[in-house]
Length: 441
Image (tube, rainbow, N blue to C red; front, side, top):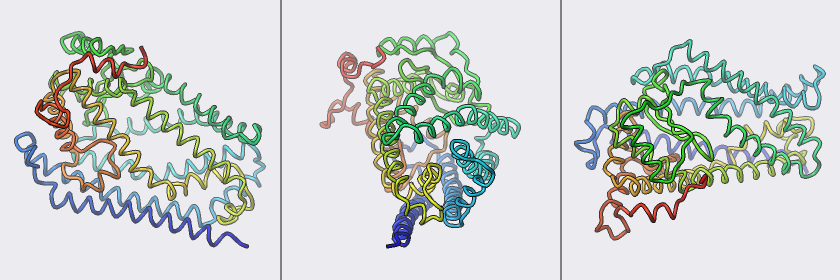
């Protein structure tokens, strides 16, 4: 019995369902923002101006419509690649050129990646130099933008090509359990990259300078000591060279670097900057970074197992026009078509992340004893980044890795209220340290 019709029917149904769900939510969110986005929500009145609310709505609408267009082009491109015969033709062309084994595997995936990358270039250019510039965020020049792309290509070649050859070796020569061996290899590579990123990779794109001596540095160091947190260093990143957006992050796994955007330091009060850093410390103290990494590794292991099953199933390749099974064809099909079967995991991952954000906010409040400072920082960052003040609840539940601003402010208010029956109120620091001692100590 020919399995092609039902394979294509199942894929088509799942692909259409994904498009319907994600586009339906996007349109719902745009309509919600158009109706309510220019209003300042009651809890934010006096903290965010009507002008900021209007610009936030406009930014949301412009970016949302652009995302719909980009998504439509991406969906059409995916269908063309899967059903036009281009993928089997590319495989045959490489074979006729004399490529086989590892070289054919690498050349096929590099060619596919290059095609997808070129297709995305116009959208990246428009997003940076039109949309971001229109709202005053873009500060990069075309020269810097092109240099970043070239550096990215060089880095991808230096790291990606050996990685692809290594992956092929495990897939071709390590027997039935190749997917377990490949998982171990990729996990080791990821660990090395986590170690290299702060000191080697990130400085290729931005300049990192030590936080200058002064009150803020002393207070950050005191806060870190109070939390039992031993960072590898305190740095300021020249984010303003490329964008007006503000943020802060920790980079590294065991003893991370604290990195502050220079745009953040220019716009927030010292207490607010400390609250943002305390939030990031909370992610490490509560082992959120480790839990997220474990979840990602579990997903990678599951994906490699699925790949091992697909490679041994000839009807799948016949359904999409390939002459027979191959490792590179299986990877291409998984890359292009896998999202149709896994999109429902997105809201689960978002919920997992939001739970961690609430916990990190609570940690920061207990550590600093100043929930109003974190609330002020959240409002200021939302203001400066023109984040959507009125996302549709369904859309935010599906897509948002962070709670909305109003949700976070409400949680902070409950925590800081000693009469809140839900267990709010600022807890003393000692219990906090016992419960969330950093794993790098």
